[in-house]
Length: 65
Image 1 (cartoon, rainbow, N blue to C red):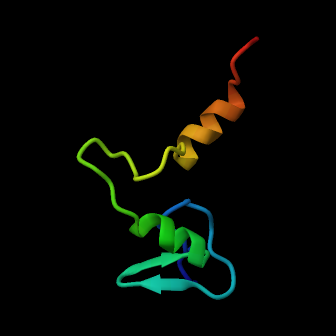
Image 2 (image 1 turned 180 degrees about the horizontal axis):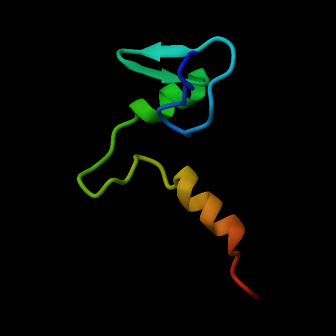
């Protein structure tokens, strides 16, 4: 039985062809690119966008206005 393959960036199960970067596998070139972006010492990227995890939390609990 084969192991379940999971994207190193978004955590989704990888179906079909994988994108490999070193020992990591990704579900798409986009995930491979985002994972390779530079972070500063506080974990911030060079753009003002929320991480996937933060975006999902925001969507689950949007601000009430």
